[in-house]
Image (cartoon, rainbow, N blue to C red):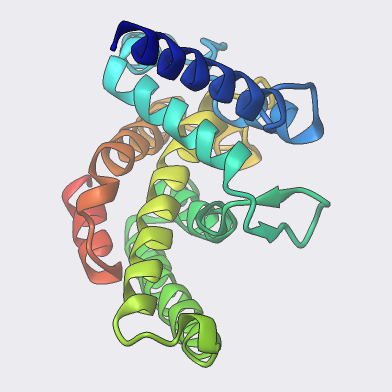
Length: 232
């Protein structure tokens, strides 16, 4: 019995070595460099009022574990090619890029516009988030459900749910990364009112944290809009 146990342990160890040696995790690559860039937060120069929040985010174990999971899926779930590059990425990551831009514009609207105009602009961004996901999900469902390999009733909604949750997690991480990036966002850096700029920075960071932590519990686009409203 002991001999069989030793043999099984050796087999498991050897298999892990072989699989990892041939995975995207094993060597320097454009994808690995991109993962390092996107999912490794560094304390950069931010307004003094935000430094405690930034330190809290960087040191938050739950967020760092989520980041590690996002890195893993980014490197191993190569499902589709980004339109603007040769990288193969998870479908949820590709979806998140549009979501992130809309969420960022939602957060910074008060720094660019009058209160009334900012409120209108925010409502428009929330509407566009819903329109974007519904259009994507409808087309995706039509394509996948029409494929005999994936036509089992009920499968496509499960797949879309997984993509949706991934996209929200990636968007939350991207919001935080864009603030902490060495290359500051034009949308934020150009806000002339220092107090308002700090408030917008804070909103981006706190919304990013909320989305990362809640990603798996946000069922659909309407639930996402509700979460965004709750976050301010």
